[in-house]
Image (cartoon, rainbow over all chains, first blue to last red; front, side, top):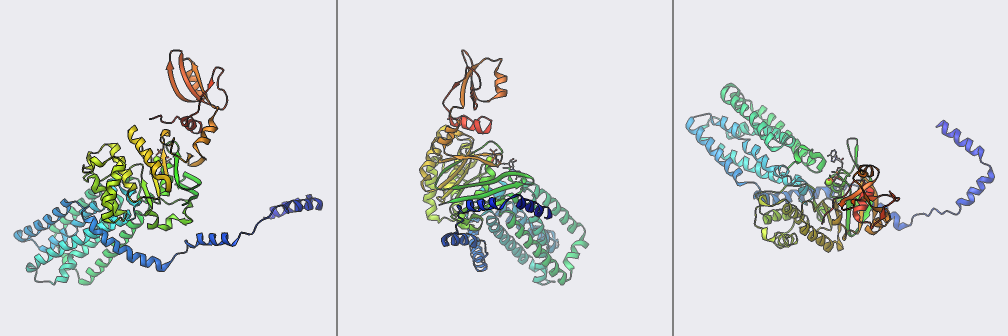
Length: 276
Length: 292
Ligand SMILES: Nc1ncnc2c1ncn2[C@@H]1O[C@H](COP(=O)(O)OP(=O)(O)OP(=O)(O)O)[C@@H](O)[C@H]1O
Ligand SMILES: [Mg+2]
């Protein structure tokens, strides 16, 4: 700074007042026009869009949610029939085996509960897997909304299956209340669903399924072969169930937010996922 | 309609894929020309608002496209350079699905799908599974997808890659037909794609806009700088080392070389008529794909 000041001083010293006059005269030729009203207004208009409008955003959100629901209907046909079918068959199979083998139906519930959602994620990310992501992102109903509406379908389907299985098992588990039965499968469901979502955003379909299935098989084996572990889940105090369920739900919501953020712009997606 | 690209850059880690790019576009076809890795796809993704610029902004009629959201996507058609399709779908079902993603009314979409299928000459394959399509047919289906919502802004990234000459001509005609009231932004390596239809050519080199001009003007710039010379096999390597070489053709009297150079390169060189390929060569060193 000091240096600069010194330079200017020297500069001024070097110039004689006559030269100054000359420069002044020359500068008078140049006009710096004050921008007219119209131009100022135009600039303000351009800048105004960057000021966030809270009210507009929240009504938009509601609108978007309805659009999401409506679009879910259309996505229904996009999810392969074999997915719906195999999930239903799996649950019927689980019901029969438990009934005839006299296994603890609650174990069956815990083990089966998250499976449709896990496999459903493959359908959710189908566009990404098959290289349609970029085209989807440029559509009005964009990639992340497509994923959300499919996830909504898969989620509702999964919960319905679980509820039906719960009802099917009711006669055999009279000892505890419906609420407890629901909690028994819902808690691990939320946690595993959140984890699966996290994994599926990191890896491509095949890798994700293999990773998750191996984890799931180990978990199931643990529950089945060490009844003490399974019983620990079943006999947990209800307060803990609520606590873990709360954690599970929060984790899930965080992952959903991540998904929206990640699939909003192309560069967030990373390179592993976009080979076709 | 005015699309203003204002000082837009894209930086990946410490590499600038696009560096302070500015341009103003109005209705018409704009061709983005540049060698591999020049940053064409990167720029087009930003124009399609699926990628965020690291600096600068893109304004459509003074509105920032990243804030327009749906309103922008409503008028946008985008064909990526690389894409996949749902293989088990028929062409019609695929387009109907994308019509719904673009928010088109179903009744309206039914007619629209037939219309775009006809535009890309896939009407007779409309009920075929996409999995059985050839590469060029898939590309055309991609083009059809981009046209579904009558986009006011059409961004197509190497749309003619893999198309046979006939389809390429058809596509070129299609573009010039629809460009009257739209902004069409297309990238290509194939110079003949844009020869008759581009209102302006934008030359992109290592992420920077080095020229933006009409075709006529570009040709004017290389006029008198294109030479033809007959050489022997022995001197060819030396010629290739010293000058930008276009076509090399063997004939009875030796080897005929096309050279792009500011001054007369060798004694017996004769000036020849400049083509768009020479323009490419002049600005990018490497030769362009000669086709059609
Ligand atoms: N996601 C990314 N991460 C890092 N670098 C990238 C990424 N995408 C592109 N690049 C780099 O940016 C530069 C421009 O790439 P771009 O794909 O835009 O080129 P292009 O002009 O479309 O080339 P082509 O003619 O081969 O399609 C290249 O050097 C590329 O390596
Ligand atoms: Mg490219």
